[in-house]
Length: 251
Length: 285
Image (tube, rainbow over all chains, first blue to last red; front, side, top):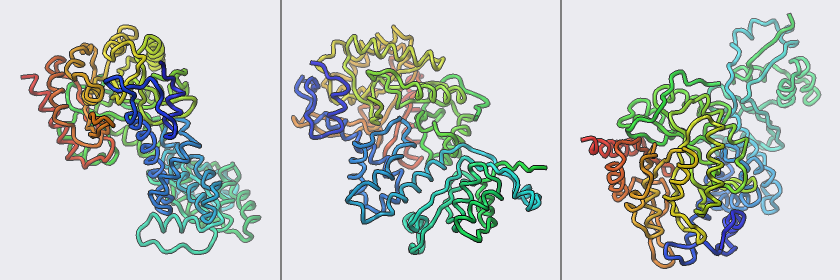
């Protein structure tokens, strides 16, 4: 009687299946409940990984509901690598597709934000351009420069008060969410990612910069999105966040 | 990429602990009896940020052991080349004092199950695991240590004892062994054999490192004890006694305290390391 790894795995992920024959205790009796130790280890460790990865989703749904979702998610999307820092990449789409969560349509965006924060945390280090260097560049020259952003920078667009909901559920004494759509910029000036609200057009501006546009080109893209867009405040956010790591001017 | 400017080429025969980021400041301020650190390889495979910065800082001050938990060396499919490449990248820049992995499988058909799953001890398993160990040692360009598992059940198909299986792997691959004394106690209790008999049968001359950790106590449906290797509490007294029994036979070895769940404040972990120091000093006298 042999037990293959596919048989072991199938029984491991489905508590409804019988324990494979050929697994025994020290007295050669069927392993029975002993097999549940492995089932439990897998379910508990991956539920914990999901709670750690998505603390705001966990707070919004409650630990019990989150653990239930983590179990469903595990069966639909078992980890595809041993790097737990990447586990949960499919969770936003998983949440969006769940019929029982259609009354909480913003959950998926919150999960995207938590995922982006974690990716920013593990992103490669890069030294920021000194603010004085930037200040010394004439505005017209700057608008024609090429800017490289830090690997830790992330931009999210949302139809929901994404930043407000996240902050209300992760920061003590944070104000209640307002009924507005919010795009979010994540920078990592040190080791801790910082999400900030982007003004209208800001997401288009940063995304254009990230794909190689000059500030002038990015300004034009943002202006299409939000007429009258002022790049100043967004450049300040980027600068404060240590998000600009290289500037190549034309001269 | 980071560079460990001065490396420590072996683990000292002193206490070490499994490193937890929440202990960074306390550990840097006063390491107590702790002389070396072990990290889980997979937690340091990101591109940058705080985890790698902390590791660079610590590796300049302590010998570091890289302990993999995700290679699935007992898997019935080929080793994941991407994961092997990540391990090589980590061990190349860090140049750790030791690299170890588990006698277990954890990945099947592209799904990583995040647990150390058991193997039948047969000639077929032996061939497969030996091939995988050869591949790892060749790829990393270093000798590895293989850790004995904690077992909750056995396979009816097994034809070798665990100690015979491990001894055969050492002969065939030249790998060393990581002897987890808590795992010995857990497996022996769960499967009804004597922990000291296991130590007596173990190829102790190939042990490069010893692990200690806490376990939980449960029972199966027959009322038989079922110990769970939880790494979530102090090392149990009979496990300390088994450590003394082992050290009396091996002489001084690097001894690691593992505490991975419900991680305590630093002084509690440091006290466990101090107890390991006492056990090590007792055999030197």
